[in-house]
Length: 134
Image (cartoon, rainbow, N blue to C red; front, side):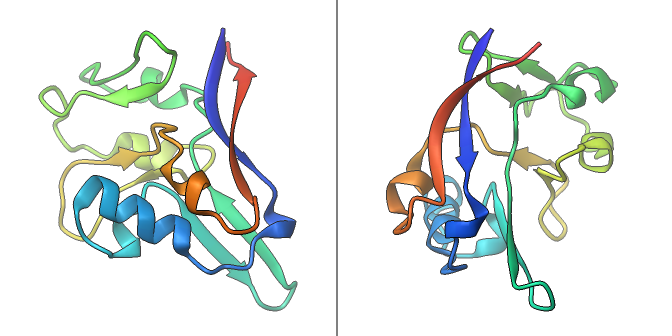
């Protein structure tokens, strides 16, 4: 199945954090990058940027004890907040480290490939693409 997801070119990233700001405003109505559904990290020693976002691999689906995580009709991995008990197993098991929990919030959140961050990325380091998933 082909699934929409964010493509990444970390070598183009300037760590301006426009993507994180946009994401937090779109989904949480606040410009707080800790609430973004993606992360930009920097390794100053190596002068490298890392763009952390969901690859829609689905590992979290099998980890969730309450079946709160599934694929929607488009194949995007989504969380049903009504079923989620906040155990945060998905956060700990995500191989991409792309399932997030903010401060004292009990519910996890992740990228749903809406593309709003990609539209705001000034360098093209983040873009929408489609890839095969199992």
